[in-house]
Image (cartoon, rainbow, N blue to C red):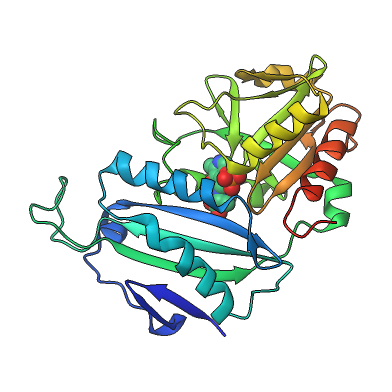
Length: 283
Ligand code: PDD
């Protein structure tokens, strides 16, 4: 059932082996992408692919992404996920295997390409209706988080702080600004409009974020792309996260204080409905 792709081969997950000197393993020298599929149909797959190509170019890893859509499709099929309600394909490309240096390998090496498909539970309705409780944590990531690098240690530590605190998620804060989640983008409803961080080097340019902004425009919801001060959250009426595995998920409490009236609000509701209506296979 669990067949993965590694460097041109499809093989059982427990037979997939990567060299110990892979630069991904030693140096986190690589990028990744997570593409959702609803009922076996990829959603905005072209955008995920384009983001991966941009990341590869930024890191100067030479790899032609042209074959990736077929690999992603085949992974769904061989894993019996071609009709799954929701699944995603994880895909990672590292610079390849070479003696460890702080610069690129002197001789061309083949990138290491690893991918797998996995069924995933969409956020349960009961959790969505209750809304997430979140905490804030310092954003300790590097200055180019628009590149979807596999170096996720600051994200892992921040998310673990949420687990340790017994809450659902975490919002990363830098210089007093609510930047994004550890694995999702962050939105608030403040001053009557939707506010989210502009697509600078300081956030991942989420494909779901982009989609939600399109939906907001279509619904006539005013949007402001600007840094959102953490203090402003005290007067925000709503907050939510967006992401491939998160979809649109309301947050009703931040650092122990209710957001707005502490209930899921109308903007999150409307955008979630519109989000679902736009998915592949939606009626
Ligand atoms: N995370 N911000 C960060 C830091 C992320 O890691 C992600 C995605 C997002 C949302 O991007 P998108 O809408 O394109 O999924 C924002 C993926 C799902 C992950 O790490 O598993």
